Length: 253
Image (cartoon, rainbow, N blue to C red):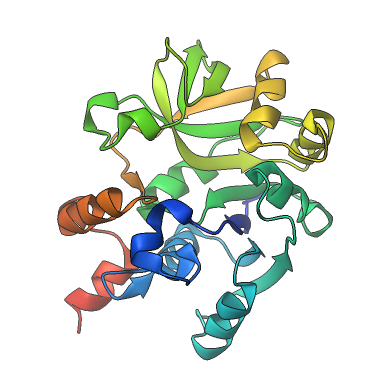
């Protein structure tokens, strides 16, 4: 399989749970250690080998567009897709980008930060046709907010169920997916009344045994979607995200 160089970032939601920090700004622009969350995502992805980004925006899309103009992020291609239905579930945002992605791609959330080595390891996995590989974390005891985490039940190498409310689960969803364009077919099939979540599409793949689990091992990642999670991330960043391009920039200043 050719190296995956494309990435889809979902950055459309209004981030109501972190509004105490974001005020009226979009969540992807909330600064963590002096750099917006979106900058962390893009720079870490670039360090993992990504060269082309498709970013789906919605809430205050004008602010993200302006920020990208004023703060170029290196020699990468960035296409913004606006989702006017950003108030719906995140599967709708993913579908808004389907015409831009015809090859395998990395799918990321704008509020999940990670070390480049975590994404790099996922990108090295061979992806079968019509398959999605989800990076999962079996180190459940190190998760800051377990109640809010999306859980996965794994059988062998395949994920058989996924959701926030699973009673029985083996690992946690890191928000990092290696996908082919077939993901969009599953999301379209999962639409109900014009709405669908990523998990809806993933459950369809799981039922077909086409959702594979990849153990990120000691790879670091963190969901930053509440003020409490944000404060926790700041407290552990220098310890757990040593390879972060943002942290490296501060070290060499």
